[in-house]
Length: 469
Image (cartoon, rainbow, N blue to C red; front, side):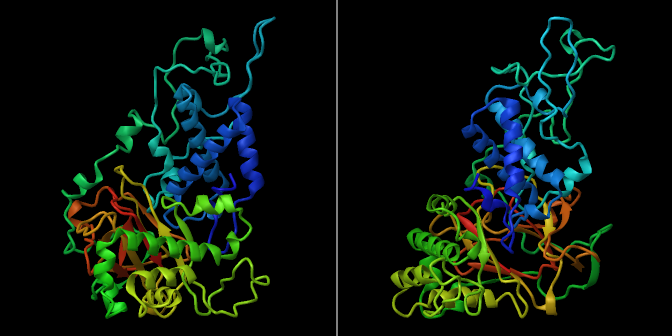
């Protein structure tokens, strides 16, 4: 649980109350009669489900408690299916114990189970760029009987008050996230490379006129909705773009160095164990922090309570990686981060996240803006792409976009720095969806958050995507 609690951190370093997590774990353990190891598995599944239900740069602390419980409940349903439990039992709302005939043992109450809330509108509102809600991956698995039958027994009665075991079969109850299809049909595995080869970048797509939006419409957009930039333009004379595009070893060392340096200089990570550090720095794990080095609020754990920055160098491992592959004229690691961050405009948030996302599956689009704001009119989001293979030229690396005819500002009273959600927008045709093409010379893409809606790719093909805000 400690290893995965980083998933619920926000940019201020706050985390979901650990006590709540322990309570939910205890409830699941008590109900399903499983070992602590299984509880950890269930909890990590819950964190993933909640991550999918929030966004690529998510903050569970901002979610209502019922949505957090919703994510945790989907994970226990997932575990129940793995051990052979009947899904119609795991998806029910809790019910009270039922009296039995004399001499018969009263069935265990399931009233301590975490609720799966049935508010369909609530479920839809949690959907953002990380893909579908974690619950979308769960489908009924009828026909399998539980090896732990008594633990998962239904404690309901028929309409006439008789014991459920003697009543006729009734239609199974379903939470709003369950459908009559399997997990593979809901979020099928795909050959990502084969699929993206059939997709059109569509970068000349028309702009969409939003109707019925809860956001505040601004003026018509006349400038380009997005633009690309190469690493050669930012750091000339180093053949940076060519080496980045054609050396997986370089990209891997660059990405690993950035992640390690940011982790080691972000105060909210300092109290984590070495084992947790290794887990969080695995390449398939997302990580966040701040990109700002010069004047940034960073510190090393060994410093005097964060007050000693005498060497004035934050990105030490990144500096070594750059000079190892680009030579002695390579920029310092701090310069690399701050120069890319400077592209964010005159009033950046300085937030940084390394996004992995859902791979090898097709997921629905989930359109949103990150903040619905653009301070001073020049603030932009910058994405640095890490392709999955050398010489890659194609889609699936960058987030997908919808160009807008008019600026879309967050509605009045919207929580600052929180996503503005537009949902799946299934009524919007493919002709409006831009799948930006990555290739050498297009290592970065930039856009104003009020000019486009964006979503994780429906089929992603990348190592990761670093977002600078």
